Figure 1 (cartoon, rainbow, N blue to C red):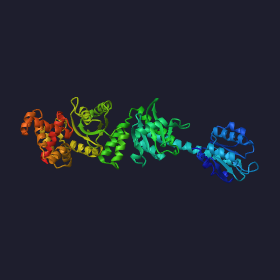
Figure 2: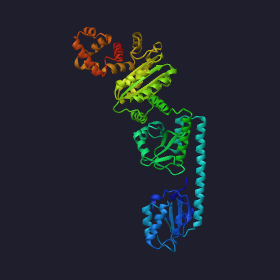
Figure 3: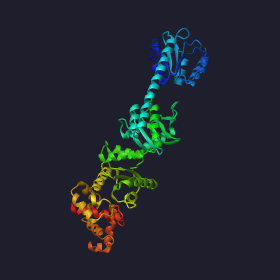
Figure 4: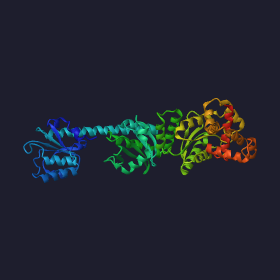
Length: 525
């Protein structure tokens, strides 16, 4: 990395000249590519950019207008700075030069003692060469590190961890839909890094500008200090690698990001770029193990992945099925969910053979439940046990997840292969009797029947008796009304009220099964 003007000013040769920054302080971070003596104004046309010009002012023009044109000329050619040694020609810095350099942001340094320019150029050039040599060595080390990760087939998350460690900044991998699929936060909080990720990422794409060569494949977004590198393989873009918090660009940050992106692109070529699956595995594990600092942090991670939680209904499903059809089930589920505007996060449950946990987010709860039931129940002769939980708001997600897993675990081994709505009564009775004292069963009863129990308590009502009769005779409402000692018209009014309180379709077979299970459990409490 090239030294900046500010760093060059600390060199022994320049310090001996008692330097003072007379103007252009905002340009002191400019890299110095070379330093040379420029005695005359005509030498400006030879500049390539990044030079620190040393002069006594002996060849400068005599009029203020010409001096202004000279400053503009070297500023336009992107000189790094201008150093003037005071002496015979100038006893003090020309005011017009100070004013113009300040306006152009060109560092203007005045040396108040006689200075050996040869010593200055020699020291600066040595500094530059040493810095470039160190940078090349650092780049080679970085390249070797990521080449090693390539050879070992390191996981995506480990590649991101290494990139974040090297630049001491959070690093996020996103897909082409601006969804964060993997990240390494480097001690930052998920909320600080991932909040409103999709919106910010789209803005970054529109406003970012390419970095200078040789890092033109990396762009920067100054508004939030992002560096963005494309992950490409065989001319196709697969995603983007983003380093946040880079208002001041860390040393070798572009090199790190580009090497990390190259490693990830090789993973794409190998056909193993299942970034989203791995991110979902991590989030499901965090939910199950409760390894997150607060609900807001898990929420922002879900939303960064494109799983909407605001203004939508959440449904949780647990599934136990044959291992060989698990991937196919998830592929069909995800394809249908994308087509039907349902967001899905799904992953195997660690430590439980052939168990899946699925979160679904939809505008309508029945839509999500229908989608999950269609795709997670046993298909093509493959048996599956399915537990559905919800609708729930985000605040209820933690409870819904753990109750779902508890209920799935509660299914006896000989009952594996039954699907929601079709479990034999004997198996349901066994489940309830063996688990009736557990919090999961009590929570299930409260979740399903709570609105009816509260209504009956507040209104001295009989809705529980009515729904029990209905569940016993779902296809014969006349008989259910008689058992409730109600006229058919009053019985239908009660059913309408029950459906509204529970927000369930009482004509749906799955609803009837849910009520039957809940009533059976309620009778055991």
